[in-house]
Length: 282
Image (cartoon, rainbow, N blue to C red):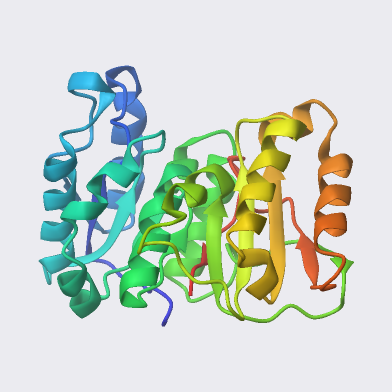
């Protein structure tokens, strides 16, 4: 897919397809809108952004309807999901995949939005951006804003330029799928699970210590994905790393892929950190 390029006067939209944004964080949303507007962008807010009943931003049908509407709107250049949590998979039965395929609208999100990005790619072939635009107003906001503008307004590669190391192999090639490991596994056994044949699987995580993450990796292996993929791109696993368990995780990944010997790359530039970069699925 071609990379998104923005310019003064373009319209972008904000939405929460997973859990709604807590009202106590409304000021952060407003700050984000100020920065986007300062670059000359028009910002449209979906009806489903802030928390309502059960912590959602709306029912699954309402959230899906808003995403469908924004995808169909020719005036909207890109859609930024600013949410995360647990409820994104609820919208999948109500998405208009035919319309999404026609519009090929750039959709940004991460964490629980791994569900939506991978489902769209599996069903339509339309890739998405693994990136959280709320990073523009978080701890590393100034740096993120500089990279965002350089990437999406000036045509640079700043958000894609990540430090990495090869744990095995010297070359990693293939279309990219994946994202948050826990959320990707919500798609297992459904028509929305992207096939891994010849593709690179990207994995990262927020919660979960070593044993829990290993149990998820075992489940991923049992889907057959690790037997088909061309390699792995491993990002950060926040809670696990806080307990000093990163090396044990990387060692386990090497062991369960030893038979095939696929290339494995590790980067600290992808994950839930506010300094994380952007990867394009597909």
